[in-house]
Length: 345
Image 1 (tube, rainbow, N blue to C red):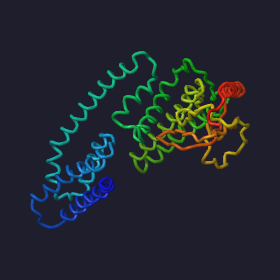
Image 2 (cartoon, one colour):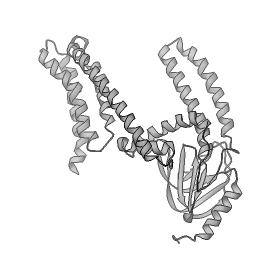
Image 3 (cartoon, rainbow, N blue to C red):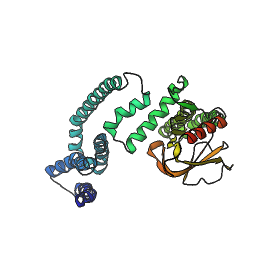
């Protein structure tokens, strides 16, 4: 345990000594060429390896972080080494970069081929959706933490933005209740998409007078915002609330969801109407946009974990939601509660 706690301080000490020490030595006059070569190799090789052995390997972090750390260290090395001492650095890059590029290409092609084979094997009977299968494929490489959730969120954005136009609700064996038809989300998506498109085109030309790169970065961010809005709408259409046996899943597209045991419901009351400026309680999950009016509030006996995009999680005691068929959904939940008396009481 004590060794695990020391790993991060040791890593920071190594990186600081190598980078700060190299920066100081490189700026000394008349340093020997062998010293310059050793420091260059240390910056390019020793720093990423230290990150791997002291950070990535002990914590079982995704191995792709080694590649990311190598690129970051390469950029820092370019910044640390003075122009007069970049001779060895440039020579190393001349043969190192092609090797890195080829290894990345081989790795990507191998991963895609392996992924396709695993995808067909996992989803041979068609029981999983594309996103569920993708999660199973990525878990061995990215783990089950933040990195996996961040990647899955981005994949979901583009999946629903592009494929969502053609996807229909498929909830075999489960009851589902939509919530997008009477929501303001479609209006909001249309209005904000128009605003973003006009603003993006206008500011692109304005920013271009200052910097062409900044203008294109701004435009790419606006395009992503459009994809996010369109994807969000299609995800609310494709991911309804679900009742399966004694489980209830409440969702807000790919942004968030919660799965709870219906027997864990203390009571269901009419939700209080609030304004856009009202602060949301931390122990409550709001499965709706602030522009929409809530219909019902579920009060839980025991806290349940709510899952949000990018791996956000929190324990909640209340769930506020709306449905296109609120009375029908409420009746179904209450019927299950009556048929299955709580074992928690």
